[in-house]
Image (cartoon, rainbow, N blue to C red):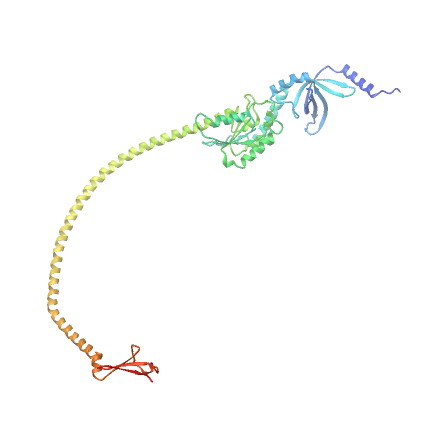
Length: 431
């Protein structure tokens, strides 16, 4: 039996495929790999999964040659708002090729964006249905936006032009409204959008008392970069966020899942700034209206109170006049009573003084005689106690050191003492 070389066998396979297959087929498949080469070609891997979505049942390599890829890529992104990426379901027109060296592959000649749009819409519907089933779809919409929403946490790329436009529009508004803005940086395109925005939301939540609202903005850029905002985890985080979430993703005709769950959705970053300014102006207008109403009510109340005070004043004047008249009559009565009582008291006091004068007239001579006798007795006592008289009777006084000696035991031998007599002194030495 004659044996074939591998090249010959692959040639037979190639020839058989070329003779039996059509030139092109429309193929439904899911992309598992997308790789753009430096030469402009795009290499793909198509897969088909089982009904349960976990097992692969088919796989094939694909390629979009550079000339075709230059036409298909912008058309697909423009229509779907997304770039070709793993996980997308696509409907492509392919030609089946078999090369002796490279084997079996599919060459893409065309792609139908409507099929992918339908699948993307289905995924969005599924996410929204899941959020509604979880009971959180409208949670953020039901949060009240504070009347003075001027402390704004912004989630955006620090280098994004949309962030600069937002700040310029908000902080330099024509009405001189004051806002406080802080950026919580996040990646706003590519495969890290979900994780980056979730991390920024966590950072805002850690200091939620410092902010009135959260603004998620992304200005300009390719619509193909919006897929990162169409995830359940990010939508659930925005729906359940404790502060109102305002989205301004930056595309007029494209809606993302987080736009559906946000408190307020606007089209662009500048529109988000305009919304906040308008909200402040409405709040200021309401406050001014309330202030005017309070002023009018206060004015009416003051006028009513003025009239009431005037009426009370008139009543008080009449009452005061009556009180004054009654008081004057009472004072006159009291004055008359006081006059009569004073005269009676004066008469009583005059009589009492007359009694005292009579008593004093009779008692003074007796008291003076009694005191004269007492003074004579005191004089006799003083004369009897005079030391001179005692000395004249033969008594003497002895002094030692200028002090009167009363006891002999007080003296010591050798001390000099002085004895005073009625006439003269005697100096002695104690032995």
